[in-house]
Amino acid sequence: MVNCNIEIDQVVEMEDLSVTLGLLPNCIFPVKNYHSEIDTNDEVDTVILSALKQILESGEDFVNNLNKEKELQLVKDYQPQNEEVKHLRVLLHGPAGAGKSSFINSVDSVLQGRVTGRALTDTTSNKSFTKEHKTYKFHKGPGTFYPFVFSDIMGIEEGTGNGVCVEDIKLAMKGHIKDGYNFNPHSVMSEDNPKYNMDPTLEDKVHVLVCVIDAEIFKILSDESMRKMREVRLAASDMGIPQLAILTKIDEACPEVKRNVRNVYKSKHLKKLMDELSAKLGLSPNCIFPVKNYHSEIDTNDDVDTVILSALKRILESGEDFVNNL
Ligand SMILES: Nc1nc2c(ncn2[C@@H]2O[C@H](COP(=O)(O)OP(=O)(O)OP(=O)(O)O)[C@@H](O)[C@H]2O)c(=O)[nH]1
Ligand SMILES: [Mg+2]
Image 1: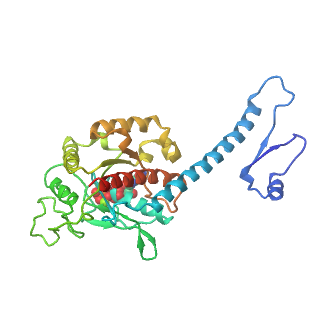
Image 2: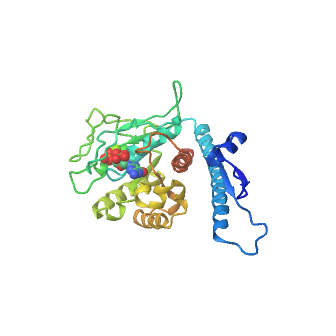
Image 3: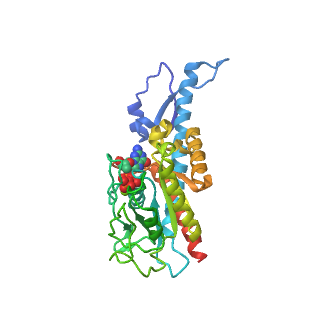
């Protein structure tokens, strides 16, 4: 970026300067410095501020990108210390439509460096779209995978006979549910079901439980849905499984974040939402991560990658602690 003084009578074509300097025209700012004035004035302030704002934003982009690369490298280098565990298993649960499948796609997108959509998502229904238990591995290179997997399940819904049965989530946590099992909202999986895993290994069992919840609707979730989520949480606590939460759709909940995802940690509205969610779920605020999923984007970008990576990093750290203390 060039801080270029342009005399009023000296007409400098920005395009020519851009060619001469080899910089894009939007990286060049015409500035009139204070040099002989006694007082400041609004017009001069405005051109100076406009250049300063861009300078700061470019610096922030650079620092954010360094952070993103650092966190991405940590994820790429991650290997469970416990040699009995080839991969950590992360189970996502939460209300229907909260963004569980989208979060799996978002993690995949960050790791692949392009927007992917392996886990099918749904835009219209308020009933659970995901119906079966499915494990997602993430490609690291040809024929190799990251040492963590995500399990996607049916969403929690209000009322009996709707959404996943809480008892089925408990079975999933214990590793009893094989991939391809179609959840039945009316009845809990029985031991004679062919998809019932009688003898789960350490890798079939869940090492981190992540509650995925939509920032837009969690305040109006019924007491019954909250009760179901609490029951899952208490069962996980009994099993010693670490728990985190992801607050999705922060772009819809906060206009500042919609404008720029980087405002996520500055938004007072979001901070308030996180505190409320913390009280509702009984999870401490530092276990709740605001996330904007990739849902309509064509390309990945550093800011969205960064919020997804911070959540992913904490998920892996929690799982690592758990498997090291078995
Ligand atoms: N704006 C916005 N939309 C999102 C975000 N995350 C998910 N969505 C949208 O929310 C809708 C539901 O997302 P899903 O990922 O299918 O939700 P789910 O939790 O898997 O839902 P079930 O499978 O029905 O339990 C889709 O239309 C997504 O595109 C987000 O962070 N921001
Ligand atoms: Mg889903």
